[in-house]
Length: 189
Image (cartoon, rainbow, N blue to C red; front, side, top):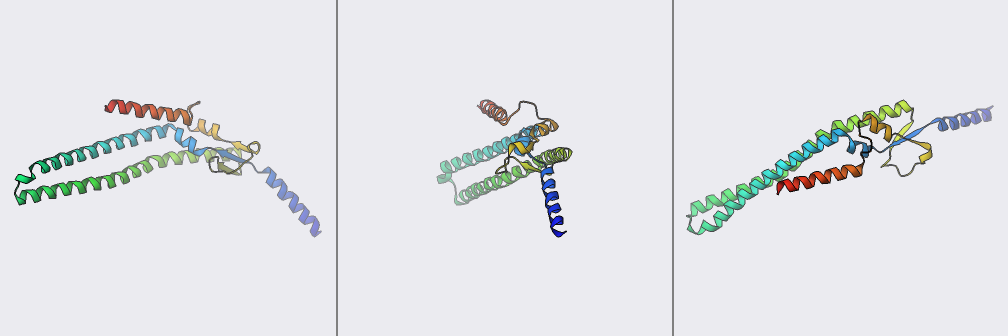
């Protein structure tokens, strides 16, 4: 009787393993191609541009004052010279502080803008996996191996659910970003 129970249990376990279905999705591709991510990239790029302009203006002002200091220091009294040196030192400190603070702020802004995008993508993918009755869903970029014939690819359905235009790929996104960068460079010149 004990052997019969063990055999029945093994057969049931085998059946339940075969009934499990697994899926995969290219999550990073989905997030990168979402329309919301395009908007986030634009906001981040605008903030970076503004930060670069502010930094450049600060450096330019410092260089101008330093040039003036070099030209006139020989004619200044000790008090004026000391005052100008303190001013230059303060300017250098403000520039360094700005660099440190702005990089942290830009990173925080990026995280804040992208968090709801990742959340939306994660929710959509989970809903699709549940609707398909999947036992587990794997990120295609993280998996070391999976048999394509035994795994359901949810990426196409997730693309539709997330409003990603058909035919839009990471390559086309890269081309779009390069075009925008070139246009920005030409505009700056």
